Image 1 (tube, rainbow over the protein chains, first blue to last red):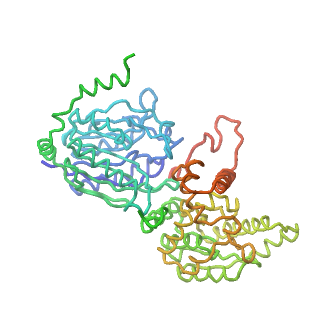
Image 2 (image 1 turned 180 degrees about the vertical axis):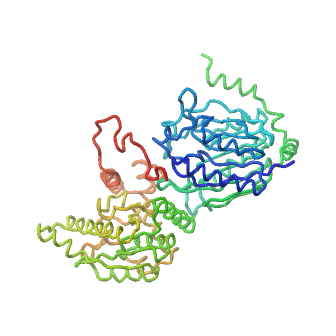
Length: 283
Length: 275
């Protein structure tokens, strides 16, 4: 049976947990009303993005009041939320939690922190160190927080582990307004990356981007869903807040994998052998 | 290839900038704004964007001539105000500027120009309280990079929608916003004295400066690559030097660090803090 998924393309307030929790509650109610079975929020949806010194101030433990409030709402509605995780050892992570049937199903910690240009995540966050498939009742989920998708091995590792749906929560800024292309340059790049990822892995890719401005940086929205054949099936073509609802059918993964059996033909042993030489060259 | 390397998608830029103005002002509880209307293209474009963001009844365009200003500037500013339907207001800065310039016998053109620019800033920030709106900046990327502006004068603002647009792009946006042709086509001028033009004073054209700055800043060309791209070595050196020498104008004042946590060094919060 296909799963009805809803994306909440929201504009979180910077470092204001109360306001954002309210925003999440509104979206949860709307998702229930539309009959969605999964509701997905963008990267750092509970906190906003350019936190800088606010990072530690808004960090949450996994059993915090705020995340408990989301967990309680996840009966028959799988919910993905972005937050700053304070780990038991005190490290802070750019994290994404998935709640399902009132359980914390999974937390992904962003592996590839962005620290260049306008970004300085490594200053404020510790990096995650693995990609683990989340076994949801709606399929095998692989979370790639924004920059995680830009590093090809991330999706490839998930692919080898049997992923069916990539969840790509983002805080992707709008940039590139040259007349040499149509639409935002940044948005075109994202569409290309998502399409390629789906095509190379015969998996669904769901891009959940935020909107709004933080001190002059506009987030680009443009949330979308790509099917396992690389076709865009739903697209919130907007810089504004909005909701996008669509159905994800895992049988499309099966059909795509029969048509193009890339996973069957992968040669991870070859990659491992070569990587061994690259990481530790023979002397 | 498009007609010009710096051409933008004007409709998309308009959308991003209108959303920017609404979002950033809205966070601080503002739905009104004001700006100085000089009769030039930069303030006209900023006004056009502001009117689209907040509605003409919520935009105050302030004309602030000095007694030596070209009367044509005021006529152009009025035409912009009329076309956009915003609220126009005139404040003659001559008495306040002369109160200082004459008393201190300031003759130097640059000093006089800076005093006038700072008088206009005082008027705008004062009226912002009466009007209940934020001051919108009207400096473009070309002049900001070249430092062709007055610190704490015309460069002062709460929100600047056109600060990441080169002069060529401002012109393109002006045509898209359907601003008066006279404003789009006239030679840019700081209007500090009769017949003054920016390009005369700078010693090169905006077209040349835009192309060079785009490669230098946006495309990260070094000086050798710029010369290879066809720019004269002296022009490259002059512009590169100007950009670096004017960095101070674009940043907040330098704070001497003493404590373990110092404003702007390691006390890091956005203006959007909590909003």
